[in-house]
Image 1 (cartoon, rainbow, N blue to C red):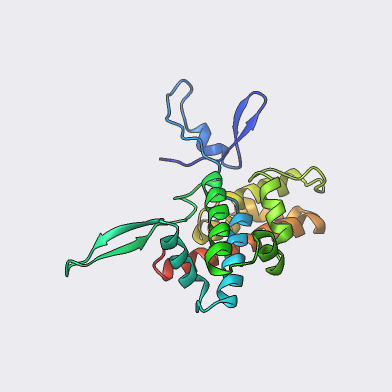
Image 2 (cartoon, rainbow, N blue to C red):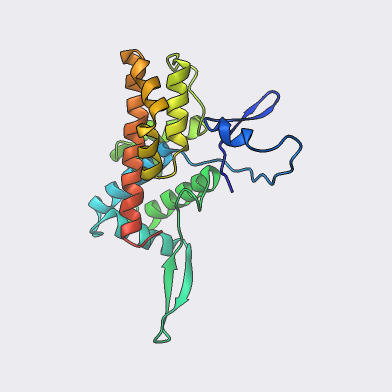
Length: 223
């Protein structure tokens, strides 16, 4: 099974970055397509910025510990029976694979309201976001759908667009490292002007931070 990131156009759906995988599907073949809105790296980093702020402002020792408590308080857990017969809650996953962009936005808003009601009472969501220095990040997350480009964004070279789309499509650090070691990707990047390289580097750095966050959560047993 192959996962493809697609973009809606006036004529239908077109692949983003991984055109070779689509080309392997025979003309006339029937395939099952599941439509979902992928979560962006910006969404991921924004949420962990909020977790870090709240953890630092409360008695929670780490953002990871606060995330577990937050999930349980929101009812996002499964009951697991231990060998000794005791039943304990197990927090559900909020990984990229488990929660798409739209579901994550609902989760984000619900978490924000719960924090302001029970964890930092008396502070509105807007005040908390402002105190955390995340106002512009929240506005960007809600105004720009994942995978789209702001209208005032600088024009990028097609090869820079291709590289950024490939980076965004990587689901883990291993896939991203393999991409950056790819001869074709290296050649495209090397040929870009300095300003275009800067845009690709920024996307690559954002991916690195997101994968670090994923690894941090996975090591703490929350996924």
